[in-house]
Length: 207
Image (cartoon, rainbow, N blue to C red; front, side, top):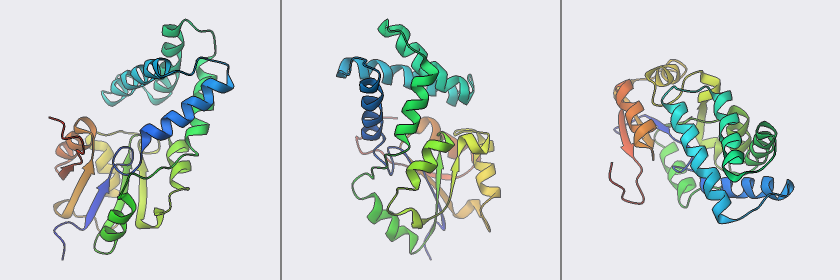
């Protein structure tokens, strides 16, 4: 019997290459709108996106505010004209088509699924995450996916993990572990919920 029976896995940058998916979607949006498509321009968007998600995870903005904020601030900083909300819709629609597993992710999940029950816990947009998961070659490994937009709470809020626990049949917190790349959402969230955690840290960063 394995130490953990319930493995709650983060999606982006833990199982899936979000950075590549983001780049593909962002490139498509910029090119479709005749906007500059350079590394510098993309870096500005990523900075504003990171700021917006940080505000969301701190509970300072709602999900609709987040999605509008990142592109409107990006456009402002670049001195460009355009509808931030419309660009965001184009971006999320394109992003939903890209599911790129990180190296070894499928093999690890298939091995774990033989001994444990696997679930996805992700702070994302329902349309995007479900679209991407529908294209995942190893989606059969997971019993369920809990998307923050659908749950109504987000990592690291305790309520998010409480919701997941309540919707997992036979859930035992003493036999559960959260695995993710983000100390601020995955590890802190596990701590808030009284769950064990494993920090996926391929770059050997300091917490």
